[in-house]
Structure formats: C-alpha cells, structure tokens
Image 1 (cartoon, rainbow over the protein chains, first blue to last red):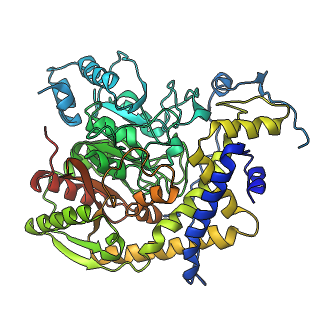
Image 2: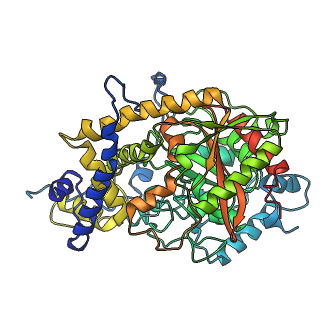
Length: 90
Length: 465
C-alpha cells in the first residue's frame, strides 16, 4: 500500500521512516473506522460550513504580482519561465 | 507599570496621549522577545519609522508564520519553505497595518499548523512560559507563548481544529476562533480549507475585540469570506451582557483528566453565582467528532500541500528528472507528521476509498453540524474545558499521533460546524495554566465576546499583572 501512496502523493519516503509511517497510517485508518457505525443514508455531505452563492467579481482587468515578485522565490528560471529538468521515465 | 505589561489598547492610548513613542514600545517588546529562551519567534521584524494612525496605532503584533507579511520570511515552520519571502500581505495584515498596527515578528508553529504541541516545527519546539520542560500547545504555540511571556501584546494564529484555543489554554491567555468566513483567509497558507480560520490571542478580551473589528469582514480575494456586517465589538463588550444559559455536554467531557474536571466544576459554580444558568445537553455523536475531523483535515491537507514541489518557490533538491526533483524535495522538505497526514489524506481520497472515508466523513459532518446548531437553539453557549489535560512534557506524546490528536477532542467541533469559540484562562492547577472554552452561535461573536469580557472582569479571570 505504502508504495502506491508514495507514487500518488509524489512523496518518496526514506527507508528509515517508511515502516513507522506505514504503521501510523494503518492505526489512524483503523481508528477512524468507527464512523461506519453511523447511518448516513440520504444525508447530504457538508463541503463548507456556510455555502452561500459564490460572488463573481466584475470582469475588468486588474494588476497582480509583477514578474519580478513572482520569480523572486524560484530556484530555477529562464526568461518568463520556471526551469526544472525534463520529465523522465520512472 | 512597564510597557510590556500594558494591554494593547492601553498602549495605543498612551501613544496618543504622547506618554510613550511607537518606537519605545517596539523596542521594549523587541528586547524582551530577542532575549527570550522560549523560541516563540522564528523571525523578528526591524523597526520602521512611518506615519501610523488608527485603532491599533503602535500596538505590536506577533504573526503566526503561516500568515503572509510582505517582505518577511514565511516558513510555516517547515524546511520546505525555509527561505520563502512573502510577496504580498495577507488581507488581515493589510488591515492591521492600515489601522496603525505594528508587526513585531513571525511566530513559531507546528509544521503547516499540524500539531498540538509545537514539537513538529522544523525550527525547534517552543517552551511553555510556565514550565520550560512542557509544551505550549499548538499549532499556534509561538503566538500563545509570546503573548503569555509579554513578548508581544497581541498575536494572530490559525485554528483548523483548536490551534488557537488549545495553546491559549496551555499558556494561560485568551484565544478566539471566530465563525468560519469571518476573517478573510487570503494570505493564510492553506491547511484544510473548509476548517481553517484565523484567530486572535491576547491577555484581555478587549484586545481581541479591537483586533477582530479591524481584520474581520468580506474580502473579494476570499470567496468564502462573509458579507455579514462587522459590529464595533470593542464598544459592544462594554455593555452589560445579561444572564446566559450554558450547556455542558457530559458525554463529550467525560474522558477528561480529573484535575481539569474538578477545576471545570468549580468554574461552573462561579458562573452560577454570577447569575448564569448551567444545563446538561446531549450530543449523541460526540465520540465521532475527532475521527470525522481528522479524515476531513488530512484529505484537504494532502490536496493543499501538493503545491510544494520545489518548482516555483521553496526548497529544491536536485535530481535527474522533474519527478525525481519533486519526490526528493518533498521527502527532504516535509517532517514526519506532515508526511503521515499527506499519506492518510491521499489514501482517503484515492480511487475506491474516497466515498468510504472522505465522503462518509462529510456526511457525518452534516449530522454533527445539525446536532450542534440544534443544541445552540436551546442554550446560548456550549461550555467545556478547552483541552482534556494540562500542558504535557516535551516528548510525551510526540511519537504517538493518536495520543497527540486527543489534545483537540473538545475543540474540533467548532471547526466542523464553523462556530465561534473562545478559550478563557481558568487559573492554575499545580502551577500550570488550564482554560475553558465557550462556543457560541455562528456570526454572533458579539455576544460571545461580551460574555467573555464580563467573566474577565467579574469572574476573577483577569490577567492584569
């Protein structure tokens, strides 16, 4: 299970921590199983505490961050692009 | 009285009367914060001379390190953002500054606000001001410790499941989580978007009321922020609050440590003597609150934290391909608790399990929300201890996630239902602070704050030193 989750989450675990994290994940999943006792047939899900209509702003141009501000924290850039190595085969 | 002992609103009045300068105030707190051994700040700001006026003129604020302050480092307590400089101000920061508030520094926190003890910070744990061998609570532990130790007048934190209220209780100060949507989350680094809310920590309810009236209110940059009007809380709380009915959910608090339960019982007696009514309320789904919360929080976190990939900002660990860079950056950048939650969150959202876990939790959330709203039609407030135990020793719960999650057993319901709740310092047990929590109806912070202010003045819970 843990290898599949690592792939889905794009998060590789160190060898030394994999066993402990897997054990914790299993314990947490077991602990939350208690919810299965509740009958939720026909109950709608709550996605947000108070869902009102989502207001749209007026369709007029506004300025946001400048290029300089956007790229200031980047480790690799080339012109107006973020730079990273090409995707490879796993 | 020394400057650092003054409440925020008193500082502002003294500045306006010309009895002290803004710079003197900043320097007094700066000196105390930089000399502190509690590790409550990750970054301290520098003094900037500028014209300030407004409701918060010259009051120094500590800001949790997941709320963006333009030009300052914003680490979220994580190695993955160790060098990230905020390119803009969060809406609440913009509003604080506009009313003359001063940023003293960015406070320490559990990594990405995941934790209840501040031990999961990549920048070292914060110590409890009452006993350096104990935790200050979390995840806003730096904010609470800084306020309690007089390193800053008022602090902002974020509260996803109790992260403002529980550290406030552990450090013996007041901590408010407002109604979901009351304060814009624009510029607050997202953990669990349907639960997150910015909160305020201070030594007097009046400072909380004053800060809330400045930073609350609709913001076009956060579509979940509410257009509800923002009343002048700091004036309203001065009026009499009347006698209130408080509900005690006995099933929920039954597993609490005995010393807390005894102190809580004495608190209820004081409330009765003040003329308030205490009744028992029934919350049949109480035992499901915490598991429901954990599923939703972890699912949303795994999705929100997908953005940390080393491509656009933050740590980047080099590798042979884009995928390798992303996987290794996340491996080295995140700490164990964040990894644990991302893995559980990924599982409960994965094909074949989504409805069984995440969908189920969202449906149970509806039942819980209705149960709490129903209760709050019968009583004005729900009252519980804020945490089920006293501040624990560093290391005591760190390796056992479920034991750590139990810290939030009384606080998560307010986030699940979006309700406002405040932790009020209840005094000391064996020299350690404890707190009780009062939860009110959605959008009615004014009654909640009036009630808390009334207790602060008449119930013997004032922190005036």
